[in-house]
Image 1 (cartoon, helix red, strand yellow):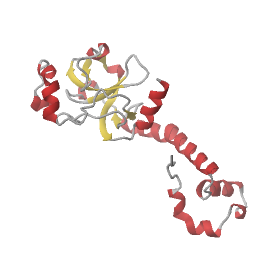
Image 2 (image 1 turned 90 degrees about the vertical axis):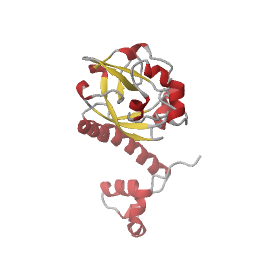
Image 3 (image 1 turned 135 degrees about the vertical axis):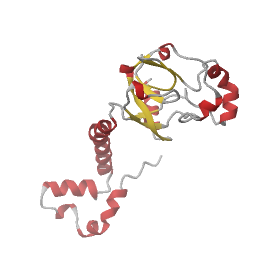
Length: 208
């Protein structure tokens, strides 16, 4: 399998690369920079990949979390509990709508909800921290439950101190969804990016 090309940024300085070699650098810092920025060896690519992961996890993600007001600013979808499996909205509502109508949520209301056509395993979201009074029925939130991975489900009701959720694809609610307290909520999803969550989904599948 062909590995992703992590050298795109190295090509920016090809002219310098032709003039300058590893041995031309007189300082250790210069040699390190040459190894990281110009060397095309597998060793260099491996170190680059590790640095990207470390910088992303321990610097960029915390900074993003600070800006978005949550400790969980990025999340990958690891299940298909919100997947509409390619059905258009009318077809999906014909199959699932009765449950929501019993909860006083109409087809017209649901059509206006964020990601009313759902999303699938392997997708990803940016998450913004919010107070419970800022949430609305139809919002998709990320919250802590009695399992390793956070839940990414839709709000179907809001009470004074807690919300009620459900996965679009699920026939009914899970026990913990009937009472999600505010202290368990990381935030609501604000930006959807398809497929970007597959690394998380694959690792989760492997580790269980």
